[in-house]
Image (cartoon, rainbow over the protein chains, first blue to last red):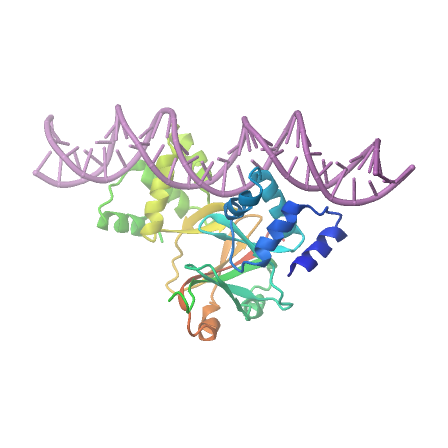
Length: 136
Length: 136
DNA sequence: TTCTAATTAATAATGATTACGATTTACCTT
DNA sequence: AAGGTAAATCGTAATCATTATTAATTAGAA
């Protein structure tokens, strides 16, 4: 996902182009790590000192609902990052030191679906945590 | 994990036997679902109206650190349940309706470890969410 | 029974997230 | 280009889960 794609999606869904929105998206486009709402606000307030949490959270929710950002829970806090480009379903290794992620091309559901015949599977979560080669 | 096991672990680690602790453990022993701190407090306060959050959270932390309870994050809240009896590593299907869980005997890490040679893997999370046969 | 450290109660503080009325802004229409 | 309108934002307060603090209580040992 890049800036152009993101704006196309936003425009298609009737969202207006604002400088705040654009800067939030730029931050995500230039950072492969997961960021918290506070991370965002801290950076944004350098350019927009009056930026409020409401704006941050509202836009994060919008972006996630449109598939522009993806979200996960790390140590009790919601973290966000740009949705991956990959067209195939995949999961993530997350470095607990630098926060960088690596795509894991396999999905355990391939094996598991058959083991739960009578169950209705809505979604699943698979994440690996540790240290990337650079941080090790 | 049952009450007797739990108390053995607690005693071995020098924790005292209190009626609150016992009732918390009884609640978990009789409920296979994941419970929040608030769930616990609501039930406990029927017998101990003055029960405080401090007591709930402190004991939950103790139980988790001793391996008596296991913990997961569901829709932004910490949830707890009795540690499974199973001696082999496994994961869970969680019913989003009734909260019941089912053990999934396979672990995706078997396949994945080799795909991340230079990475130091600390831990992982794999959970499946949906509806169990009864709730479907 | 008495003593002492562990445990708990009562309450306040913290931190993340959500909510809301007032104001401002993007952008459509004229 | 000016005006209108709904969306977006600000400023701030409320809410919710969780953690911290201090004083009082209690379990278990001496």
